[in-house]
Length: 241
View: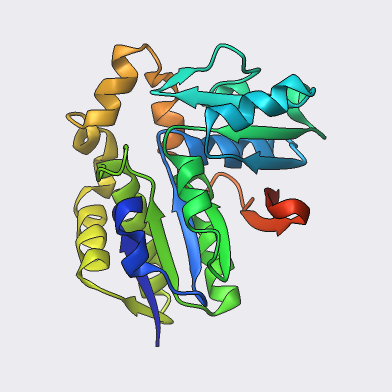
């Protein structure tokens, strides 16, 4: 039987890596939610880069850039890390470079997997369908916060594990998947109440950036599944499937 596992932090990813697995990178608040939204709004491609310096270099040669560090938009950037920044009139048909504190770093860490896709609650069912279609083991890579575990990404890991296990084609790959699934099943009825005391929600509120939180917790609003490819000159590019 196929297995679904949940890696709670990028620091743990080396022990979860399998070259034949699908890795679902998740950063609920807010990078992966924002990327999925950008594709839903018509963006053509996103180049995820790990560092601010890379993003700024792209900006200097004319690229549209989304850039965030420690929840705040970088001064040189066209967009921050809010899904509300990426409206159709600004991004439809465009190619964008994107860097965030945690999410884009996680993408670069997972790049050697069989496939790397972008997961969020807003495309939960689409990601589950993608995984079942490819019939591969799945690892959910939680971006966390600066290598620390967070609740919201773990909840998504549990939600995806639950959908896949209930399909009958998957089983939990480790105790981590069981923990995440239990967290999800016990709290899915009121996610906001469960997330109320969490670190990252407090961080967003302290910077008046929590307006997108309810949106980030909506489920299966789109079937867009951004997929990573490695192109000429070793450039990472996301395109929507």
